[in-house]
Image 1 (cartoon, helix red, strand yellow):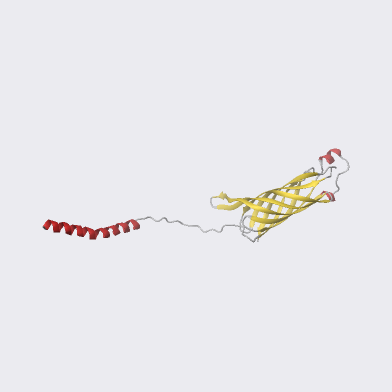
Image 2: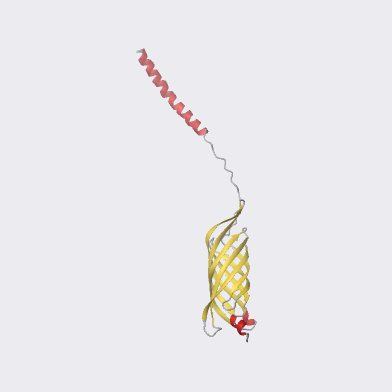
Length: 214
C-alpha cells in the first residue's frame, strides 16, 4: 500500500513539473538564437521619372548614301511618358561631300554648295529595353540600358524636301537624376533621284550625346 502511494506521488510531481521544464527549454532555445546584424547602406539611385523632359545635344557622323561620311550635329527634346516609353523630337545638320562620280569625273558638280546642306527633323518614340547596372568599380555603379527608336519626319537635301522614316538603337548611361550620356545608331531612309532614277537611300548616323533631364 505504501509503495502505491509513493508511485502516485511521483507521477503527480512529474505531471506538475513537466510543463515548467518545457517552457524553460523553449525559452532557452529562443534566447540562444543568433540574430544576424545586417548593415544596410542608404543610397540615392539615379532614375528617369515619369513626366520628365530631356534636352540632348549630340554630335557624330552621318553616312549620306553616295555622298560619303560627314559630320552631323543637332539636338533632341524628349518627354518621358513612363519609365520605359518616351517621345522624342530630333533636329540635325550635316553637309554632304562629293560623290565618287564627281571625284573621278572632275567635271561640273552635281550640287552647288547650298544644296549640299542637309537638315532633318523627326518625331518618334523610344522604348527602353534590358535596364541594368554598369559596374565601374566596387563602389561605383550606374544604371544603364538599351532603347529602341522609331519615327517619321522630313529631310531637306539637294534642294528638295523628302519624307523620311528613321529607326535605330541607343544606349543610355545615367550619371545622376539630371545627366545622362548616350550613344545612338540610326538609319534615316528617304527617296532620292539625283542620278536619273528614284531609289530609296539608307543614311546611317552614329552619334554621341549628353542629356539634361528636368
